[in-house]
Image (cartoon, rainbow, N blue to C red):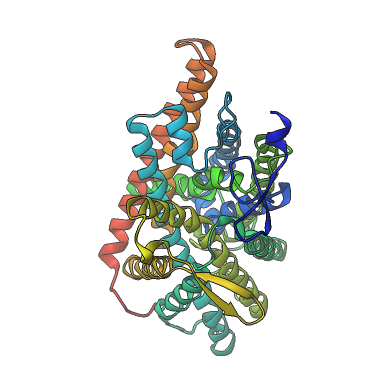
Amino acid sequence: MDNNKKKALEVVDDDGFRKNLDDDGREKRTGTLLTASAHIITAVIGSGVLSLAWAIAQLGWVAGPAVLMAFSFITYFTSTLLADAYRDPVSGKRNYTYMDVVRANLGGNKVQLCGIAQYLNLVGVTIGYTITASISMGAVNKSNCFHEEGHAASCKQSNYPYMIIFAAIQIILSQIPNFHKLSWLSILAAVMSFAYSSIGLGLSIAKVLGGGGGGRGDVRTTLTGVEVGIDVSGQEKVWRTFQAIGDIAFAYAYSTVLIEIQDTLKSYPPENKVMKKASLAGVSTTTIFYVLCGCLGYAAFGNDAPGNFLTGFGFYEPFWLIDFANVCIAVHLIGAYQVFCQPLFGFFEIKCRQQWPDSKFITAEHILNVPFYGEYYVNMFRLVWRTGYVILTALIAMIFPFFNSFLGLIGAGSFYPLTVYFPIEMYIARAKIQRCSFTWVWLKILSWVCLVVSLVAAIGSVQGLLTDVKKYKPFQTE
């Protein structure tokens, strides 16, 4: 890459103000290894970690950790392939979105398929995060109720008010113009994710050391997970196993926003090298947390592990620590929601500006002086469309508040196309790997195995959703 690509260009705008621009004429990027790692950790350590004890309980001591490690290796490997696709190898041109990368490397109908997979996944994740955040916010009130009324108290409540509160916060935060302005929120969210994961980890260790785990007392753990005939029927064991695989796949989902994260990085050092380091740091850190939280959570609760181990009330005391952990979850998911919805916002708004370039409603920016902030640019289309999107996802979350099944379905639906298929196909095309060569064969085997895994996980999650729907009574307390 020549010096012009390494250095930002300084230009003088119409008003005479000096402004730093990158080699593509856009505002100079300031992202670093730290901010990229924070974005990844915010995207990866999400609500998925909370269901891992349940997932390990379905799979057991052998398959559970093995599946976790397998997904972590696959995610890191394919993320390195995707990082190399950010720039065109000949011209050095940037690809700003996942769809741009697929367009540059594969083209044809695969661009549309990528767009459908990516943006449906982003919508699904934001719905999932609305559900999880409301459960955690409600768990604070429920934890206080148990502390005051006793563990046998019903403490029934509705999570719908908390979904409305979460949506109201997101309506405000959604007015952040773009991904590049999110660094502070991602760093805060990453800190929160470490906080609640560590609390869950510590409580699990305390429960195990206190005699609650390791096969003692009424806690049972086995090599193969929940036992047929004792905990579940044979059919339920199969469905739950499939769903658990989907939950673990969801726990590693961040390929959907990898290119957008990479597009925030400074042009030097080379973005792909920094992104690979950030991916290694992010995936390694989260895998350690996942294995510890999943395995120790299983040791603490055994085959009766709750679907969400901080809100399923395997833990009651100390109630203030449970409250703090759930507040951390809510704060983290407030940030994570933005990490996943900003690429969707950007895509839709660019398309609308291209379609209606003369519309003042879509293109005009109005200056608003905000106390203690300064000038803020308000775009009426951005305000209306983003507010509408947040309200819509909140309504869908209210209609389908099923935590585990929903997570599994999102994970299964996005893992194969976005984390495995497209990165591998683009690598084969870019590297011009010969058909039927050793590398081509093992990459194809990996791709097909992941397709089968995704299909069985999706089937298990759909079955779980159908079961939940049969028992569900809308707008009632839980």
